Image 1 (cartoon, one colour):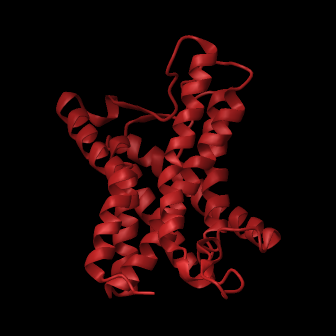
Image 2 (tube, one colour):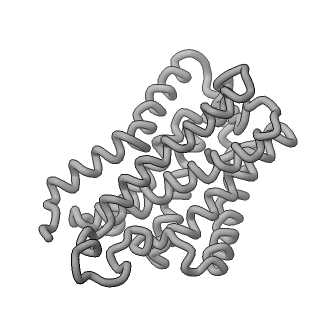
Image 3 (cartoon, helix red, strand yellow):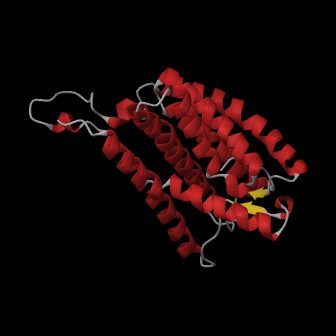
Length: 259
């Protein structure tokens, strides 16, 4: 099996990012400029989960479709990272599996859950303080984690949305990009910087505070991944932080969140 050239891998990365978080980063920059040129950032708002129809079951359908199609780039990444030799006659085991390579499986659920809880506390609690500081300095918009109408399906959809963001970001920005950046010949420090900067950039529509907070989160998560070689604890942590923000706001009112 031929090893892809660096040029081919770079093209592959641009395709993945153009279909997912790279596209989000471009839109985020444009939205930030629009907000800054229209009014002070402190007067702006950023809504993370919006209703898409006034008709209950059409809204539910749109929400579920958004979640499903957002996960397609993750499937693309899994395909790119899977060693196709495992499917050849005479091959054995799952050594070429992208799920195993990324640590995106249930091989050690207890340990992943504990590490995820620890990371959620490490990231989630300081993020609230950073949000408050950003609001006080006028560099962060008011973040509304959920503007969905109250239906029987609202909380389950918010949980699915929270996990969607967690899976997309951690699998692509950490697991996939760090693998590809290493194959580009980049140093670990440069790879982590690029990964964390991208993470911050697609949150710029929320203001500069969330950019800084998410970039720091990116550094921490990427460093943890280099030690564990598992994205599952990162998915658990990110999912928990988002669930608390999304569902907590929906049930109890205004709160900050990472998105």
